[in-house]
Length: 235
Ligand SMILES: C[S@@+](CC[C@H](N)C(=O)[O-])C[C@H]1O[C@@H](n2cnc3c(N)ncnc32)[C@H](O)[C@@H]1O
Image (tube, rainbow, N blue to C red):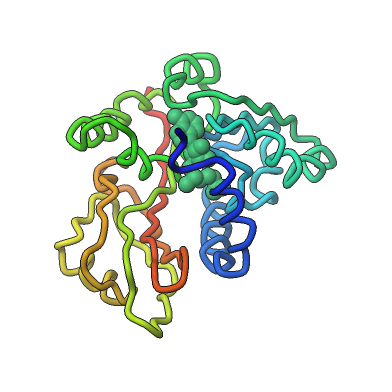
């Protein structure tokens, strides 16, 4: 069973577009100003690209997207296909486990930019134990070091105080512990009320990578702390 994708995700994303617009805009603004390589893009956990700016996708010559959800490919094409075609971006959509195929795809496309699109923070919902998920997420850095890669992922999520206006994007460095004063201040600005869920992604990106924090109004009274960052290939 797909706990983080599938028809319930598409339904929620489709009807939440207005609620999610501010977070999507912050992701878009950040992606468009980054200097990652823009030849080939590999997306893991793309779904229909509900929160991805088509203007950024169209800056690549090729986009290769993976999702385990069979609805993802037709819906991605429906949302972004026509614009990408007009801009001359070749679109390759795959249904399958993009994480299991990483070694293969990074060897096949060493010049590509790999983007984990709000998927790594969801691994804690799989049947693996939490320790094993944390380890798997930390191992990603060595697994990916030959290629340029990045990720937008949940750091934490939970209920918010009624009437909270979520804060604008905040620039920080990856590896920030939520217990640190900066982490606590950010959670306070989001109106976080305990308990919040830890998505185990604190150490996904190499320590000190420049990141953006975005507060995402996921549903009424419930927000997610998104973190996004990327790093160059270390060959
Ligand atoms: C929270 S949703 C985000 C989807 C998408 N990035 C968006 O913003 O619309 C997580 C997505 O990751 C996909 N997913 C989960 N595990 C995956 C895996 N191992 N390989 C590829 N996709 C995966 C799910 O099917 C789901 O579509």
